[in-house]
Image (cartoon, rainbow, N blue to C red; front, side):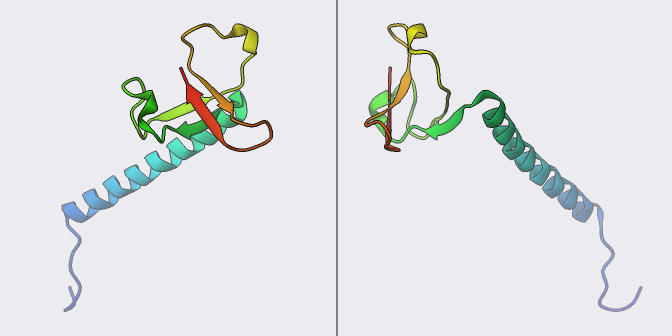
Length: 93
């Protein structure tokens, strides 16, 4: 072995394997999010305020999809536009 070169040990290969596995997991989760959204018409959103606690703590990821208003029941959690045509939405239960 020449001076300046180090032989790669087990820890190096283990680190590369773990890094590759984590990268694959992140890519899979991202791909699944895109596929689920495309197939179901759903949209991921995040709870930004404490008004939904303890059911949904701040930072909770929720998946929102359009439903027929006639199917809603008392106690359902809904997300709706504050003003039609504007991007701002509110989630209430």
